[in-house]
Length: 60
Length: 60
Length: 112
Ligand SMILES: [Zn+2]
Ligand SMILES: [Zn+2]
Image 1 (cartoon, rainbow over the protein chains, first blue to last red):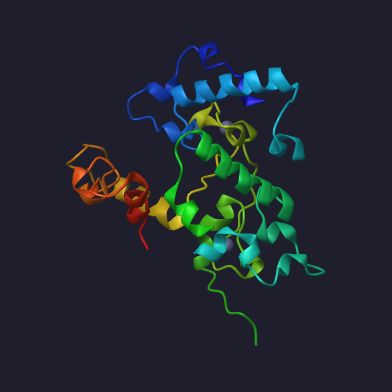
Image 2 (cartoon, rainbow over the protein chains, first blue to last red):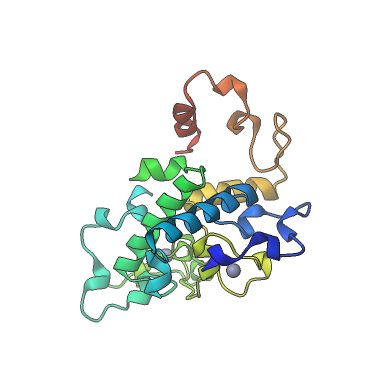
């Protein structure tokens, strides 16, 4: 899942470039910061409950 | 276009009729169920991102 | 008697279908182009951005989405926050509009 993409593993961060549209990269109105926070939260949740991914990924 | 948002507001569901092609109505391989799940996910994640969309709140 | 659909208008892709669902199905005035969704973007983030070969589907209702896009194309720049895509009276940073609570203000922003 995309949550496992660490933003830090991406060397150049094209969405930071001037003129870049954040929404081309981040869905749902996330920004780099809020996405990071969300991933951390998810990781913690998954760790605590042993739960994996939400529905959509599975349905495909 | 409130009626375009929620499937439930559409009284007759022509895509359910025999001979109907689901892909005429649903893109990306969505079905009624997965589209519903996708809409819920949109709502949930927009909330999680802290970027709630006023339009959607109203449409529901 | 059959539905007359102007073939010209079929050239324009359907913004609702591009979101994922169009209630008009085969009778839609616009063209329904079958595409493949980017599952990374559905998850929330796709590192490929504009280079991605799958679709990053917008979920904003087309009219709102298009309004903003057209405004951006037309080079509309807000003189309050300096950002492109909206006018000052629609600006989230316009304090003149902030006499009510934040949530009320947000609803008022929605164009009819
Ligand atoms: Zn359509
Ligand atoms: Zn992508």
